[in-house]
Structures are given as structure tokens and as C-alpha cells.
Amino acid sequence: MQSILEAVQAGATGDELASIPLPESYRAAIVRREDAAMFEGVASADKDPRQSLHIGEVPLPEIAPDEAVVAVMASSINFNTVWTSIFEPIPTFGLLDRLGKESEWGKRHALPYQVVGSDAAGVVLRVGSAVRNWTVGDRVTVHCNYVDDQDPSAHDDSMLGSNQRIWGFETNFGGLADLTIVKANQLMPKPTHLTWEESAVNALCNSTSYRMLVSRNGARMKQGDNVLIWGATGGIGGYATQYVLNGGGTPIGIVSSPQKAALLNELGCEAVIDRKAENYRFWSDEHTQDETEWRRFGKKIRSLAGDDPDIVFEHVGRQTMGASIFACKRGGTVVTCAATSGYMVEFDNRHFWMKLKKLLSSHFANYSEAWEANRLINLGKIQPLLSAVYPLEQVGSAALKIHRNEHEGKIGILCLAPTEGLGIDDPEKRDRIGEDKITIFRRYGG
Ligand code: NAP
Image (cartoon, rainbow, N blue to C red; front, top):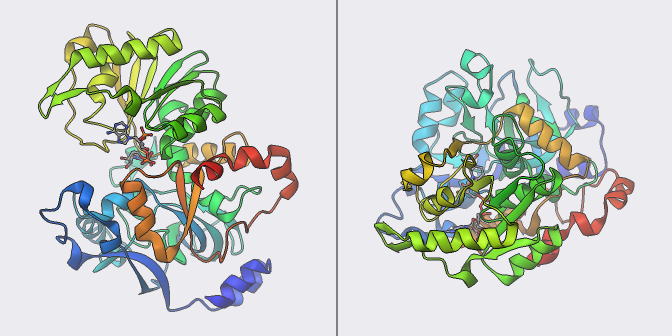
């Protein structure tokens, strides 16, 4: 692996990289099948990813004709790695077993361990015989939509593919490792002005927010829209805030600390609600929601934005869905992609139907949406959310920080990259876009 790293750092050509033999095994962050019941009886908040995420050597599998081997310079922690590592809502090994039954190549995935991780930036080391658009030596980022393109259901919008999966969550050989195996249709060009770790944090969250707000499959945000964003400095919220600002809308960002409020202001979001300071109690007990709190919340939004939100960017789930549906404007859209606080959501249907609101589901992004979102990063119109960087050995601590909501934006993980700051291909472009803009989350993350 050392010779691969040295060759990448020396700017080796594709031919030179292709002549370096691949190792038989590689370093990876894994969860183990035998641990799947280790947190039984433990409260969700007390489950510690440091106990379940291990660094180990795993064999490098053979690649299918439509796949590539990528040397991972950096990766990132996504919330799905938190879910995998606490085995909630279900252990992911059942998903690997299902993939294992699907095809000969699928069998490789059903293993006693899972290499996790759904983001990566790195260099292509090998391509399968059916790969056309990518060659050894290409500098890439990886998006996580894993699609079987022989399935007709995947050919309108690939997120509708009946066996669509998320790489590194519903598949093995994910990105939190020194090497990864991906389908060629997961590859995208690495933004030329960013470091490896800045390039590695975007694909999953940025593409998700792009689909939710900008794409025709999402809420179709338009100029002048008021958009209420939960977790507005979090992984998907930080990109959502930028999309609203870029698209001529008004973000109303909800966060939980003065520090995050200041970060939002610096991003250009003026309407900010600190939910902790406001002390909203949408649930008066485990079974009852409090409409007076929804009204207090709605009043606060109107005081900041002058109107109700045209779009609510939802992902918190049970704790907030009732308030989101209530606060949304007549005829407006609540778009949701997740349920961090619980997936059994409740809302008052009267406020929903009488005011002709819409509830729209969204999940990651198809290749075209991910490509567009990546292009906006490469143009410097959307900035990476990198706020902190950990070495791969500390992947459990990084996941714990996200599980405990002690972070801003995204946490990057150095895999093969020995230090931060490497991988910038176009320093002039970086200067043009502005170091201050690119590193805004890093300054707040410390
Ligand atoms: P994140 O970085 O942890 O950000 C989520 C933010 O939500 C937190 O920073 C927090 O912000 C806010 N939040 C958490 N609990 C809350 C509560 N009880 N009430 C109000 N706000 C709360 O996570 P992320 O990467 O943005 O992901 C968010 C969710 O989306 C996760 O569940 C993830 O699995 C899911 N997701 C889904 C997809 C998909 O394709 N379907 C893609 C990406 C992410 P404050 O504390 O500042 O308010």
C-alpha cells in the first residue's frame, strides 16, 4: 500500500499506477456480524460506536467487469455509519445477505464483516473490462447510489430501481478504508480546488440536499421561497442552506447553539432559530403533542421571515414532524429523507389536508443529480462542510461525535492521505473561490 501512496503523491501516471501490484488485503473500518446483538438492552443514546467499529485487514475481492478499485485518500462519516455501528434500526448484515443471493458477484458481499462508509475521494487503481469512462489514475469522488443497470425499474429515475442500494451501508466494501470497490457509475471527478478530505465529505449529503430541494424529483424550490431547515449546520442541512441562498430563497435555519447560529450567519443565513434557547416542547409527554408549542414555533418563523415556510426541509422525524407539518405554508411542501429521532411520525391531518399541504419523500440521489451536485462543488458554488478531520484509526470516536450531535457539518477521515491539506490540483482556482469561503466550517469545527 505504501508504494501506491508514494506513487499517488508523486503524481504517477495511470500506466505507472497500473504496474504496481494490488495488495491481497487492505486496512478497513468494519463492523462484525458476531457483534450484532452487543447493544441489546442499551438505550440508543448510550450505544457507543467505538465498541463496534474496528480497524482490521480484510481481503481485497476480485472486481466485476463494471467495477473499479479506488485508493481511498479520504472518506467521511455519515449518519448511516452511526446506524450501522449501533445496529439500528436493524443490523445491516441481513441487507448484505439479500445482496448475496442476487447474483454471482453479489455473493462477495455476504461476509462475517462489513466494510462501512458511503463517501470517498481517491484515485482509480483498476477498472473492470466493461468500464468505458474511467481509467487508472483518474482522481475521483464516489457517490453512494449502487444500482443494477440491468433492472428496467432503474431506468427512469435510478433511485426507483427495485434493488437500489446505498454503497457501504447496504453493500460491503465501503469507503472507510484504504481501498474500496465501487461500480464505475458511482464515480465523479474530484473537485480540482479541494483537498482530499474536503472532496470526500460532499457526495452523500450534498447530493441528498440537491435532490430534496433543487431537482425535479424534490420540492422544486424557486426564487423567493422561504425554506425552513432543521439542523441547518448539520450534514444535509449545511448544503440545504447553501442551495436556498444560491437559489434566491430565504433560509430559516434551526440550530441548537449560539456557535452554530453564528456559523449560519456567516454562511449568509440571517433568519436563525436556536431551538435550545427557545426550548420548544412539541411533545408534552411520550404520546401527546402540544399544539400551543407548534403555534409558538410558527409565530417565531413568521416574525423572522414574514410568512410561513413554502418548504420545510425535514429529517428529524418523530420529534419535529408534527411541528413541521403545522408550520408549513398553505399549499407548501414538507420534504423528508430521514427520521433521526424516530420513524413513527405523527401529525395532525386536519392542518395537513385543510391547508392542502404536501409531504414528499426523498432518498439520496440518482447519478445525474449526484453529478450536478458535484459539479456545483467543482464550480465553487457550493462549499464543502468539512469541520474536523480524524485518522481512520479513530473512526469510532468520529462516529460517536455525530451520534451525540457534537459536531458541525461533516467530519472527514484520512485514509491513505497521511496529513490534511493534500490533493489540491488547481491552487489558482482555490484562490479565486477564496480560502475563507471554502474553510468556513473548518474554522468553526476547530
Ligand atoms: P447530522 O450532521 O447529525 O445533522 C443533523 C442535525 O439535525 C443535527 O446537527 C441537529 O442540529 C438536528 N437534530 C438532531 N436531532 C434533533 C432533534 N431531536 N430536534 C431537532 N433537531 C435535531 O446528520 P445529517 O448527516 O445531516 O443527517 C441527518 C439525517 O438524515 C440522519 O438521520 C441521516 O441518516 C439522514 N440522511 C438520509 C439520507 C437519505 O438519502 N435518505 C441522506 C443523508 C442523511 P441542531 O442540534 O443544530 O439543531
